[in-house]
Length: 320
Image (cartoon, rainbow, N blue to C red; front, side):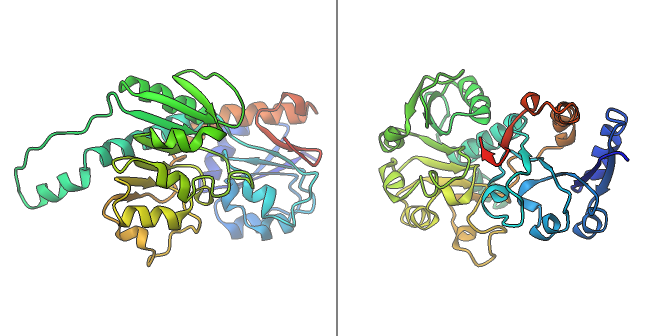
């Protein structure tokens, strides 16, 4: 009997069609809804899905589960918020494929906020012709908090706009596109010099509220904060106060402590804030971006060569 792979995703059928000819040793079960996944999961030993949207009851219904291949970079909910998940279940991610879409969203925020796109559209709606100087990205400083694959993609694009790029990293390193990489101990100093502070960290106990009132308070009044990582890394109460009191020029937020963002949350009504619904990692070619890594990992797993798999997050009960 072939090992069963449950793919739980809105594009599950597409993944199954692409992977089945490449991996005839496996049986792929496509489930676009939670009910479909629950009805076909009992014998599956492998689960593929977007980590934040894998429900606990699906894990509970998979007694034979041995490996989760996340379709996301982040896996923190699997590691910390899934008590039913056995600690010896292998977890891998899709780290490394999200650079283009995440970087483009960051650039979109920077341009829209720096040039007041919302104000431009309001003038257009009123048929008002009002010319005014435009704030450029050229010559500005972007401070990227987190220096991983996504940050490297963004740094290179910032350089194309003539920007200065600093990084904040938990360990000493050099990375392409960065003028300088600083330790986390220099975060407040770096924030004080940033025109754009862009958060690209994975969530953990160490990064919880890393961007707190002291960091936000150190930023210049004309600076902009962007969070593309996890909502709980930024102190949303401190950020909201800074935006409302105009101590910060603006912010772009794609992630929030509570998702979906409640309709009555004051973020929705901030005129110097752009809210997007956690779309940073999404693209119109996502499955095509994912297939090469999925294929490599499936082949390595079948060969019992976990050491050859990409983006192993947890193996043998140890978080890597």
